Image (cartoon, rainbow, N blue to C red; front, side):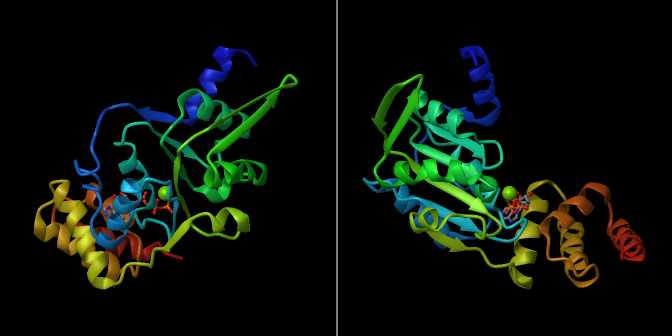
Length: 236
Ligand SMILES: Nc1ncnc2c1ncn2[C@@H]1O[C@H](COP(=O)(O)OP(=O)(O)OP(=O)(O)O)[C@@H](O)[C@H]1O
Ligand SMILES: [Mg+2]
């Protein structure tokens, strides 16, 4: 594979924001709640030594949102577990020496790629042998990752993370998060509040994405009621 092909794969796999930003500037501004976890992340960012953190949680619990917030930091790289290949990732680490490696949906990372993270996480050392030549370097890279479940993750990998299990939202958190998102997106309070309650009480959904979907369709409280009734009629 030539250099251009390699760079293309890297570009598809990673996004890089090289803008300067400080830990305090707007970090986590898009995320409602989780103040304790935000605090731990900030502690990790101010640590002299790398502290790796894994968020495990149900769908729509803001895991990807956390990863996207870290893209605001200088020298941060985002990758999906399913898209990272060992060769691509190692080359990228050698070339760009990221400080923060963000791996969303890490449970989809094949075992051999998970293995390549073990040494980076423990000692920062990465080694690669290509065409009978070995190169190695040492990085200081924090790894922040997410997954829905840990079953497909190697035990030594899990052992290197501080792990947070995000719990499903309870009613008051659900309303707070849903109303917060919708109001930020210019949905009037009464419509937003109706959507949040209808999704929880009538659709019995616990998925914030359902609130966002309905908000994109509805202009009035009557619209919300009608959409909920229709969705219920077509439910299995
Ligand atoms: N606490 C929250 N603050 C702000 N937005 C939230 C919060 N929780 C959920 N959301 C919203 O829910 C949607 C899904 O969030 P996100 O993609 O981060 O979920 P996820 O945990 O990565 O889910 P999945 O496991 O399905 O990938 C987004 O639109 C996001 O804005
Ligand atoms: Mg996600």
